Length: 92
Image 1: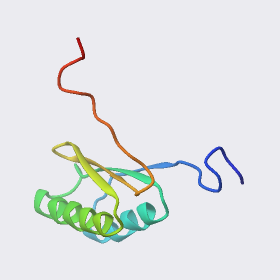
Image 2: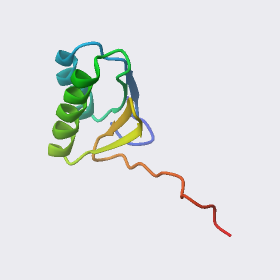
Image 3: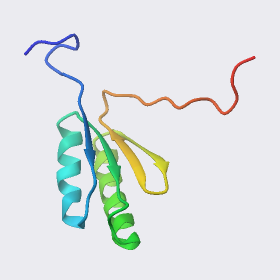
Image 4: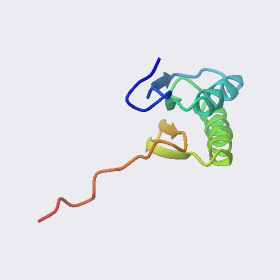
């Protein structure tokens, strides 16, 4: 299907992982040029940190971007997507 972005159609996938072995599946989605939101609140803290570190490394190796939204929520973006955050102070 041809969309406004050529053959690529933007997609956001939301994950609520419960096990470390789901990390590879998350990286796979970013490789498929999907933006992935991960909320790791259902995992033990150490295992959640390990999962986030693994995914962040995989995304970085693909020249993607990762951003911490809060203590348990992260967004991972493929190279073709950019993320902008609100400035700390509004413009005058």
